[in-house]
Image 1: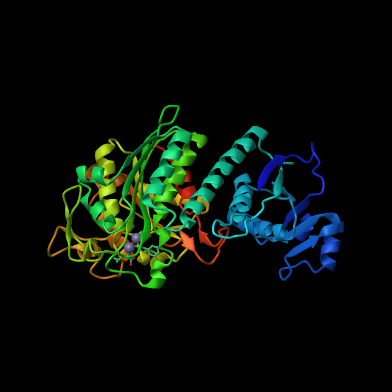
Image 2 (image 1 turned 180 degrees about the vertical axis):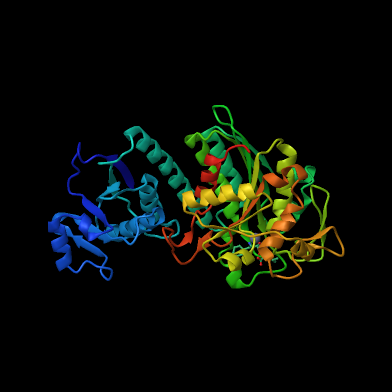
Length: 478
Ligand code: BES
Ligand code: ZN
Ligand code: ZN
């Protein structure tokens, strides 16, 4: 799909179908009102296509940002199946100037589909023209917004592609190769560590999780340094489980089926790192990914084992399916040993089924000690349209991860509050100086769905990228 800006005052796009977003019938001309009334345009009949005059009218309950995205996502899906190849939509409806990024996200994210495994590939011929007529904003400002939004959408779709790729085709090595490609393309520093390096770095917990896999575990460290002066230092740590079978605490078939999604945190970090140079955000950003596959076998780590983490804590493995927190534990220690003066440390993971139960499948769970950081994430949520819900820590839940055998247990003694106990486990690996800089995002819910929702099609949603980039963009050193 191509998407272009134009002004109908200056240019005429021939043979294009115009999408008209109607909040109130009275906003239209008398003639249009008459036609639409006779065609019974109403809440029960919200979409009317008038081929004779090349217009597609959509009655909209709301023209808020998220509603616009969903409306345009539905529209493009419908219109392309009907063979339209040129579409026009106006940035300004009669009473309201819409946000350019909402139009772009609606079209570009809504038009996504994943056909890597389909024998019939999609031919993409559509061009969308956005009419800037009557905009109160300067053309240069709009063009900047346009560029930024396209970069973000391109990377959301990139993350979706990676996450939709099967675990057979996308291994920890694939992730480290992608990291190297991204680094080359966008002038980032990239370090990759294989299992021999992980041994040397005492990352035995991460190694244990990947031990039964035929794919070598990879620790990936990407580093973006802005061209201009940096306003702060952000560190992103992603759970990159290319597959989570549950290990010897094996998942049932239904739970395992879509566990290629367990790399969401990792691929989201890849997508963010790949966007930063083009976006030119003025923060130094580190992206660290633990890319591992959790499998079974004679050499698998076992329930009942005690593992020694990089920060020297001993961990009783009470469930090998609680592997994400184990990988993150060592990656968080690595990050904090390597990087000094961190302003914000965010880990991103599909960590617990409990988070899905707590917040529903559309919402990312946010946990942190620091209220102001949570507020900043809430603002990023409102601006980006990605839903978040904060879950509170408490001292009573902390008791659930006590171990009789080791310093700490990797699974809560009760499933209740499982998203929070997982975060409290991670907290044991956050150094004192970083406690107030740390945010944990549990994306088990929105990462992937076999039922399309909003402007997300079947499979990976790419959630997390817009939220975190928005957070970084507006982050100001505290
Ligand atoms: N990868 C899963 C969490 C998950 C579940 C992600 C559903 C996406 C959708 C994670 O590794 C896991 O299995 N966690 C366990 C923890 C439990 C054993 C303490 C869970 O949530 O059941
Ligand atoms: Zn698991
Ligand atoms: Zn997992």
